[in-house]
Image 1 (cartoon, rainbow, N blue to C red):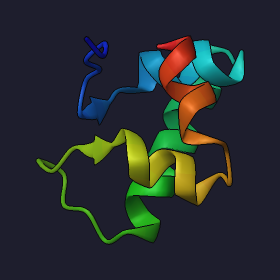
Image 2 (cartoon, rainbow, N blue to C red):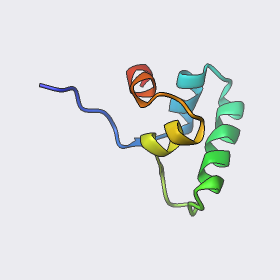
Image 3 (spheres, rainbow, N blue to C red):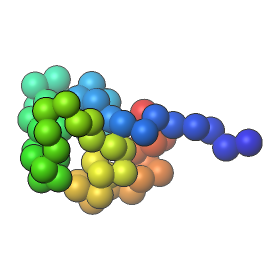
Image 4 (tube, helix red, strand yellow):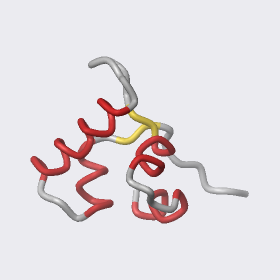
Length: 64
């Protein structure tokens, strides 16, 4: 059975994946949301985050 992972990513997740301070992670999260034209209430998906920062999706999921 495959392990399930979350669909959306948060700024806290960004901090742990990229090893950043919470404030820097918020900036990176907001940059990716802005790039995809997301509204304030719309979350960022793990796939969008990985694609925006050109990270391997498997690596990002592993660190969540």
